[in-house]
Amino acid sequence: MLLLFETPGGFALFKVLDEGKLSKVEVIILLNSLSVCCLAFEKSEDNRDLGKEFSSPDSARKVVKLKAFSKFENTAEALEAATKIIESSTSKGLRKFLRANCDGETLGVADSKLGNAIKDKLKIECVHNNSVMELMRGVRSQLTELISGLATQDLAPMSLGLSHSLSRYKLKFSPDKVDTMIIQAIGLLDDLDKELNTYAMRVREWYGWHFPELAKIIQDNIIYAKVVKLMGCRDNAAKLDFSENLPEEVEAELKEAAMISMGSDVSDVDLMNIKELCDQVLSLAEYRAQLYDYLKSRMNTIAPNLTALVGELVGARLIAHGGSLLNLAKQPGSTIQILGAEKALFRALKTKHATPKYGLLYHASLVGQAPPKMKGKISRSLAAKSALAIRYDALGDSQDDSMGLENRLKLEARLRNLEGKELGRSAGSAKGKPKIEAYDKDRKKGAGGLITPAKTYNPSSDAVLGQTPDSTTRKFEVESLVTEEPAKEAPASGEEKKEKKKKKRTEEETTVPGDRNGTAEQDGDGETKKEKKKKKKHQAENDGVQNTAENAEEGGKKKKKRKHSEAEQDEESEMPSKKKEKRKKKKNED
Picture 1 (cartoon, helix red, strand yellow):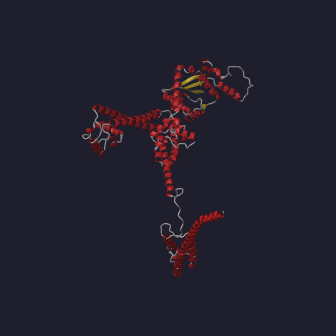
Picture 2: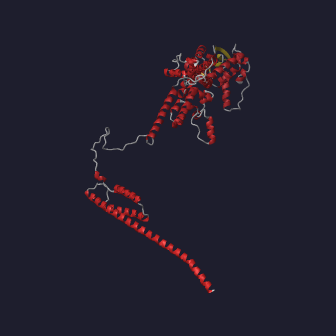
Picture 3: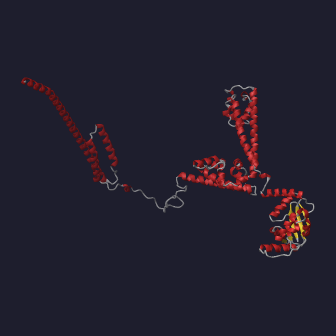
């Protein structure tokens, strides 16, 4: 029986010298598993525990003996062999080694799946049981003594290097997957943007003393710096050609403004310093473009699916905010949705207001395309798809962006669907669905014509029923009574009467029915009109009589009041004369 043992330096094949001890070990282990503790074994060298056989190198050499050893040429070969054994498969070097040294013998292995793979491919009978595992344990304890030329100080660095390589492989480690470069690049890109804006504004303010009109003519900061560097003093504008940086219309406007500029003169030293600042702005802009290209390439390598969904800048900011791509993969979609809006979230929770709907995802193109009412829904869907894309990029094997492109198409379709529903609601229907027309049996399916002829219009159907001349006279009598009562209560002036008459005429014209029911109704209408005129005359006469009577009564009352007042005055004048006469009588009597 042979024993296959894997070491960091290579594969070792040991020959078992005494197979009887292995069978005794199997019996002892079986009895211990059945909890048979009352059995007694003779104390002899044959039935001792197998662990004691490997207590010393000499005793170990009596149990096993090294038959062959296959050394690994480099770390890559050792890593390949180790990964194949972990995956329960055989490498190319192991197959060659076993074919050369295993001829008709059984092979003890540490993994039953590996033994099945060797048996299927090499037709070698393999054994995996408890006795083999005990034998492996003993060989490991005396490995450096059983394999000549393999010292402990050599074995330790080999095992350490192989373990590191194996752990990197398990984590799918690759130099191209380092997201630290992305975090540093996006941070530097933001800093460069701030510095560029600061320097560009300084150029505008500094050169604005000499040529203030140029700031309104050229809006772009980079083109402004190029023009200032090329032009220098504004007097040189008429002689220079700006066609490389400016269109013809802007160039003509610049030259005209330079001729009539109200700026102050600047010395040559000042212009030299301004040009040096322009050089700094242009160099920073060039380095910023290079850094953006580098960031774009790294994002397409490390997170292609996330880049396809949200873009390079937003994806890089998400990774930088999360700390790493692996940390971001552990976050749910709800966290990714509000990543970057932590202050607003905790402020909303503290004040019990609505929580934010989006954070860094607000700058994604899909959220920017959505209408304001739909931004929350699209950001939630985009966060869910981004979470899947991040996990696929961090833990998946493939390096393509097919998943991200597929999810982007789904999100664009959902956005169009939401916009269609919104348009349907604004068009008038309740749920964005077209109105269902009523079924008409006479209408053809294809054309808009009718099978049966169109119905003719019958004017007699418009007649007003239940309205005879008697009813009209009753109505006018009631109206006249109603109008007479307020006239009796308060007499109106001449102008008010005229206005009332006009109103009555208009009401009568509107209330009088049309000529629809023939000559009989026309005769009745004529009679009612005559009666109305007679009643109006009587009303006018009655009103005049009432007014004269009331005026006469008021005049009589005024006359009575005058007579009464005159009588009172006479009585008052008579009273003192009577008193005087009474006093005279009393004096005479005395």
